[in-house]
Amino acid sequence: MSLVGKKAPLFTADAVLNGEEIVDNFSLSDFIGKQEVVLFFYPKDFTFVCPTEILAFQERLAAFESKGVKVIGVSTDTAETHFAWLSTPKDKGGIEGVTYPLVADVAKTIAMNYGVLAGDYNYNEDGELIFEGVAPIAYRGTFFIDKEGIVRHEVVNFFPIGRNIDDTLRVVDAWHHNQEHGEVCPANWSEGEDAMTATPSGVADYLAKH
Image 1 (cartoon, one colour):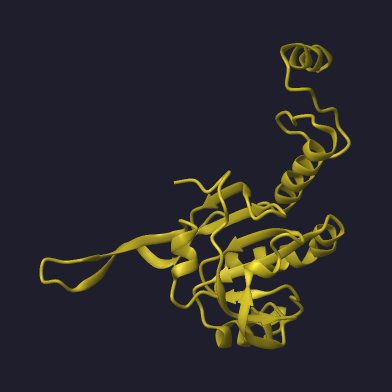
Image 2 (cartoon, helix red, strand yellow):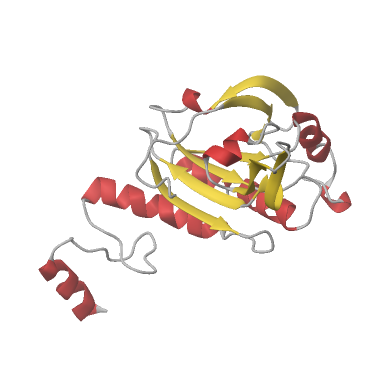
């Protein structure tokens, strides 16, 4: 079930801040009512596609922050594993230099609540708890949450498919344009391009020009 248009599930968990400090009470609720959030899930620390995405978010972090957006990463690894990876240089497969929070969803409840855990827990015929699915780790889910805590965008990729960070920025821009101007943003829209009014004449005018 999609979370778009619904309240983002809140959580409090261990996290690493600024790449150097482990805290045990990092909470999404601290940002609700104050700023927008891009919350993204990735499968595992010390893997292959994941560091390219995490570092790409870091490279574009100033752009997100200039738009009033907090970037938060989540995986089912422990905070200590996050810290070890953050302390490893990039030329050795690490993500040293990442400053936005990385949350440790060890209980896997955050991934489950956001619908990105790659399977489900169930009971077998002997009453034993088992996991059914691909793996008890998170898919590459990305969620844009507005200031009121409502999910306005989500996209989920399977493990081998890295996400496009610039498109996440484009989504932020489109939301801001709609909120400021009341216009809707057509296919492939980017900041600075023509948008349109959500009326038959508005669509007709836009299509006539493009």
